[in-house]
Image (cartoon, rainbow, N blue to C red):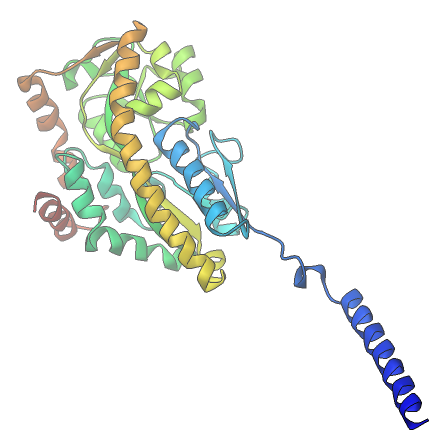
Length: 343
């Protein structure tokens, strides 16, 4: 008899406990049982088949694999979400979580030292760029972004910049009076003025039409952009001036980045390093393949300056380094960049 009573009590207890568990499960948010993936919106202005475009897709792939779907990366290429004049504000507002703009974009944000990458002929080759960007100087610049609500993550290569126009431009004097499109960098404007050209700041997505309709006479930029954006189709002449580096700064919204679970953030940091190595490898190959494709098209004549002509380009533009010194961190900073890149 005692056994039966205890069994009935036990059964009632189990029934009550089951009901409580069911009620609790009904009241708890669904995320306790099925976590919603962390979404990273990665916006950029380049085409998917550029080094940056490919690296962004590679980053998406390895992040989603390594987090087993806990993180979802949505890549918006080719200015499909924001144009280059809008994207930094969108990042600070948290509308997007990651970007990879050119260094000059951080001038209006109050970190003008990034424009050192735009200075003409300050880096003699890509190894010199890496020595500075991957050393204390480059890391110091990334740290300066934090007070602006931005976390600097990496630098991505995109080759050296060239000039293009609808007339031959063998030496700087050939650019006199030309309306040349630039991105919004005071240094790039000074470079054009040093050659007698008229700088015209335009959004990246507007360049092709501006060249096609004659709003501008020419532009400057890396060979990958010249090719993938089909700018070479509306430019009769390309000159391999290689006057300055074209690279990007990969950044994240600081509040978002700091708020990530530690294990997820660590995974993303490793993924960024791997995507950087991937990008730089692609950039090196892409510069050569883009040049070959532009030559093969027959739509643009590619000109390689002679030694004397190259010296003329350097002589015309080198004073921009001194002219822009006060804007770009001061003479001591520029001297440190020269020392790091030459070391």
